[in-house]
Length: 83
Image 1: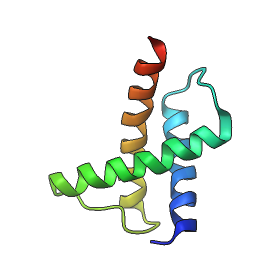
Image 2 (image 1 turned 90 degrees about the vertical axis):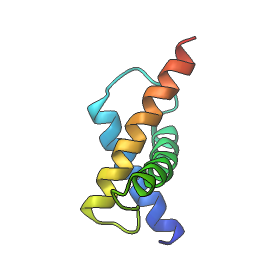
Image 3 (image 1 turned 30 degrees about the vertical axis):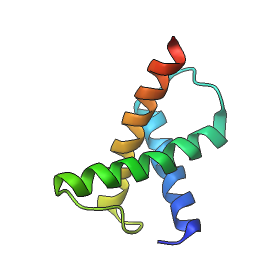
């Protein structure tokens, strides 16, 4: 998957994760993309390790795994940021 596809997937995953877990997080658009991209990597790693599949393109399964990873990362970010 190319660099631009990772950015698009990260934007989609980050936006959906932010929609599911709304809150007053700092950073705005850029942090949402970064959380989405890193969440996609985390979700892909965990999904592959558990046998659910990998993040390998812009398809529904990859977006779902990326969103779950982004939600996990957003919750971790909020716990660390809240201290």
